[in-house]
Image 1: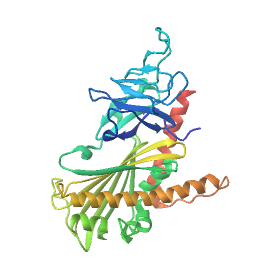
Image 2: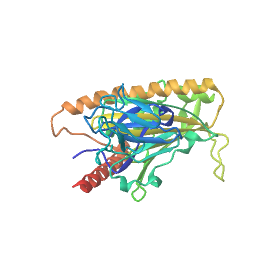
Image 3: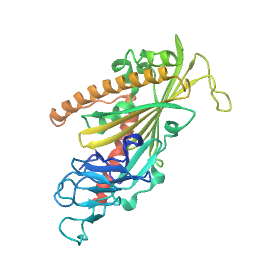
Image 4: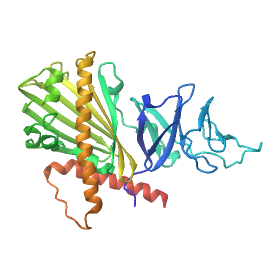
Length: 349
């Protein structure tokens, strides 16, 4: 059985990646063609001509007046995937239609529905409003991961690895030493993991962006909505500075770290990352620093997980894996993902 849940929304791209030219990305093993119509709407359909399966994203295929012309034999498709012209005849076969995908553009992401289109409910897409809020400044990117998406979920739900893998960037001794609390909302389908460090070293990632030095308060509150969206609510403040009784928090710095974890195939992943901050909004130097450093951190994860994928792929069956307290969030996420994958497999039987 596939480990990838279907009948789910996944991030396929940033909105900025898709313009009025042909763009292709594989999501959950399906090669999908995207483009933005002249009206500005993103459309998504199978990246395979129905005639001889030539990828429509490959040259000399081209986009002409919101229609895709296959560069192999000239089959032409409208924005809804329907074929409107075939070479050498006036009649278009009734079955000449590309598979189309429900698509929603939201919070800077382009979301695509993988599974039964009749089940696509846009209200189920989790939100990340900071990425488009005027009260935040965001840097973002995407890195390919040669590892199954579940390994990235494990990685992000157990941030104790920051101490060891990301020392000199975001890791300090307190991250691994501080216990976590885990909550699972089964009804909403969300895993929460929190680690509040009330007296911690300030890592370079935050010292150089906020200007804080010495010891700080550092809170990490994770919110993971399987299968795709991960949010890390980071609070950085001087020692002893707490939010006000009304919930406002004017003397702290807030960073919203968002990951969209999209399976490309069973063993490869699109690792979308974004860092939104509520301070130094117009400081390009801070933006450049956070973009460069967060990409470095992501690439450190990529290198480790690529190795881990190869280890898992070649180890003998029955190899024991030990879990401890810091893994409670990741284990809860694994159970949710397995349930979602099982539900989608059952619906196709």
